[in-house]
Image 1: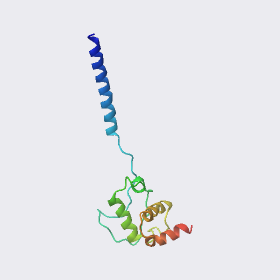
Image 2: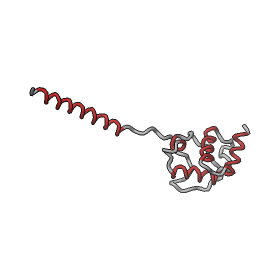
Image 3: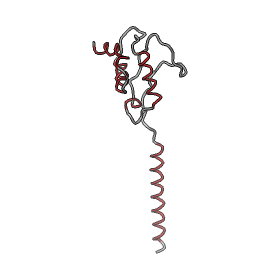
Image 4: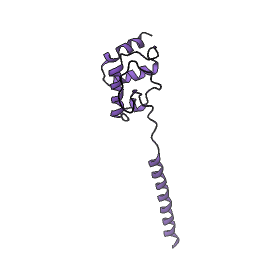
Amino acid sequence: MHNQPTRYRLRGVVVSALLLGAVTTACTETAPDPGPRFDDETTSGAVRDLTCMKHQPQPPGTRYTDDTQRHTGETLALLRYYTTNGDKPYCDGTGPTNIDRQWVDIYVRLGADRKNVATMLDKLWSR
């Protein structure tokens, strides 16, 4: 009979260890990468007056496409950039790329005025 309490105690220790391991694993899991940040061409956070735009090097990730991961500061930088510069040409003299189109789509989807990027949209749809 003395064996019975020891067996229950051992079972309790094993269950506790497994539970602790599961909780530790769940709490240390890293969140998926939300993708690149929009390059708003600021210098140390200061907005510069641009004569032309550069192409975005990477498409938007979930930080812009998933409402649950969207951050106001990042979204405002995107909105401010295209509101101020959306009618300017690209510095390399070419039109918007497919990656640029994805960013402009997000700009418009966020409720921004299409007229700010109308020139860019016209170039995209005329291809």
